[in-house]
Length: 240
Image (cartoon, rainbow, N blue to C red; front, side, top):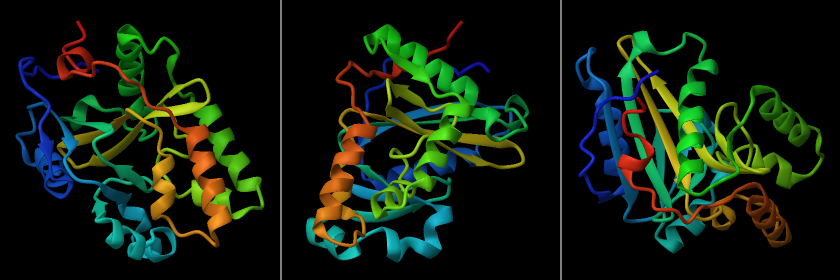
């Protein structure tokens, strides 16, 4: 997989997260032969959830706590669990022709996981690595065997549970990936954490406050942020 050309002089715009997700998805309306990249950071916080959680949203996200904190609740057309989107996440989207993407959905993420891990290592995150399929499935299986509410909540989050070909540092996830496919193109969306996702615990449904603190500790253990110069031309420039 090759990455498209991009303007390496571009800056990282701060965008309203609702508008930014719409702009990401609009890349799918581009001509089939083109490839496109865009980058942004959120200028306001939001809890974002994947399309598959729509019917369970009320049992996952605490809308009252979000409203009280001024945190928007947004659905994206890609899949994936709940995440806290704020200024501590660098967001990227890559739209490529469908013909260049592996037919198997899981396998189609491999190139991006490898590339982001390599670039992050070159910038100073020496232990950044792509998560293998088997270890991701083992992580999810272990969470499912736990008989506690915190494990069940972690499984509904994007960064708490591992997915194949995402990027981790040690045992903590650093980069989350999602995808939308159309007949002519595939849109890959990803977020690179600049701090852990433990603040997400404030906006999820929990049985009690003790469980919220346990969830916060679990997310702090399972996620990691990196304080690196994450400029677009350093991360997703042409790799050849």
